[in-house]
Length: 324
Length: 285
Image (cartoon, rainbow over all chains, first blue to last red; front, side, top):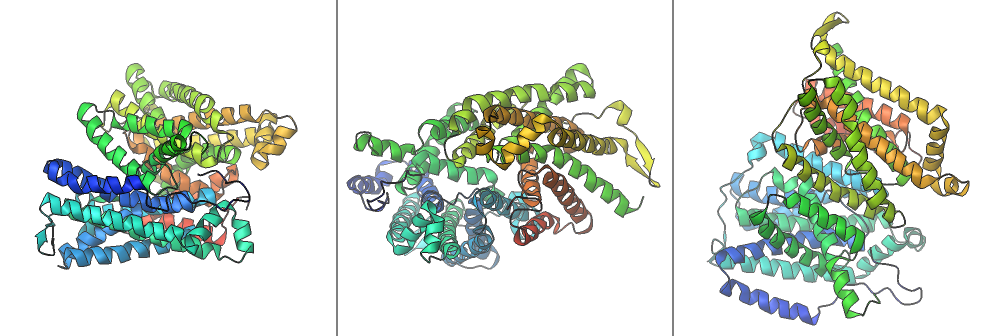
């Protein structure tokens, strides 16, 4: 996590404002689908989707100090709800996605209610166990979820008359969802609620003494993070037209964690960049060698041992000349 | 044999297996405050090394004896070179580190042995079923139960009755004070980590004939072992023992009588126990 600031300066929460380079990056992102192949556009669409999920984990991990090892539960809940409502009840994909957000928020509320009273290790083991529970439910309840085969055959919907089957339209849906999520999460972090969350991370006893309802603040953070992870999951389902228990695996929870650690926890944009690096690297490495897992593991180890602030920390250090 | 009796025995056998994993996990947690996410990998590595030894020598017993050694060596190196430099950091860093290692180990196993599912053959002397409580029960499973109980007994004797065990207990209680009165806590951590890994490797070989040997078995066994130590109370050997039996039973009976909802039963058991006693059955809190 971020080190404690000196005593008498107010806590500066990183990742709260729009930086100049972000505007430039947004400009490039708008141009990208017109210069790239549909394949290249699709790859970056995936980056946007995973970035939303990674940022939602960052809200818990980087700002709240709540390290969830089961974040795939909310991603998967959103994905399954979207596909099930669309395919089984014949809802439009957008209604399915909207309901998916509610479902993942609800799942996060239930899991969070049981988890937030646990400290440290029990917390993360519980989050892991609940995610695993959803995973086994998705595997076993074949009549509902199709078991390990998952459910496919969902056609991409249209938005304002533009079909998402077109890779550019899909790309812009991803981009807009990403930008809106980033702005919304920034608002959350800048709000009194966000400050209370950071305060709880830094000194829970003091915050309790000041009268903050610690468990309720954490639970609210959990639900918000769950909804955004669900948004990522729902979009992923729409993007693929398909959902399987892969969306709920321990490995996927680990992937989200790695994106946050790689990009730098507590910076929002960091984990988004982490998602980008991860997916592009996976694309590149998988084409050349089978040892993708080895490389993931080694990057994880290297980040934890030597680059604790991740990419974001590295940039900050360069920018401030090593003071941060 | 009565279904109830055979399921009770199966539950105890599964519990014995869980105990071999959970005891190491729990002691490591008690001492270091770190949940070792690579503990399942040690189980898996032990199983694969055991598989190769058994194939090469044709002896299950030799596999059981030899497989924990390389696993212990790997764990030793991991503790000394990677975990030790992080002692002063937040615990989370060490947890994330072990998580990174679990990926590395999976890749290692897949490049040496591939992604297929193998099985270690049980020793010929234990292939039969023996008559037990008026029914027939595979003797290998009974032997597994025996291994588990023996391991529990030995661990209990070491932790409760020896000087080294007293040091471990002191470290679990309060590592700063233990260090203050002159105990070499880092050495204690390294030893416990290594022995816990060896125990997990041993469990991998023992489980080989029943669970099978495949990449992915690590997560498969790690999650129940976690549940065991959450239920039993972290850092407590007694908790790991009782927790293993509770979860072993809940899982086995659930699968036998309520196959549709079996997987929920262990989680429900865990949630209920945690709501009643947040520190687990024998935890400190």
